Image (cartoon, rainbow, N blue to C red; front, side, top):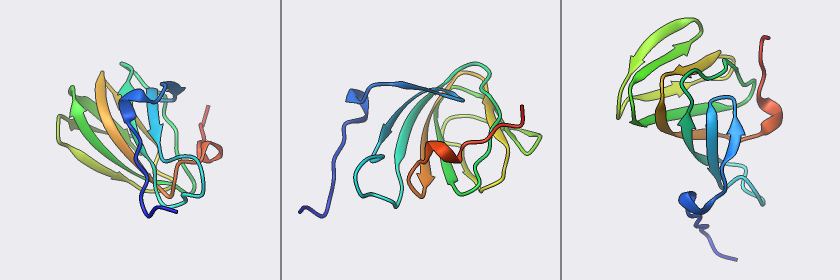
Length: 114
């Protein structure tokens, strides 16, 4: 067994997510540490939160705002954000980001107020 795993993000099929569309690497198998997602954020994404996940966002392209617990924060390329469990968040504006969920992304740990 190898001590590494390689995935090509641009070859992973896109799936819908509360933010727009995403391509998720390292979400299968026995990995429990972290995953990495390439996310194309739609103009107005849906606010949500996680009970277990911490997320690190890296804005690659576009400008807009992150709504974090009701506060609107301006973002631009190379802005990085650490989103802790329980923080209600959404992106506002068209952007492309890298999202690193820790531990690995769990679709059952995504909650909405509405």
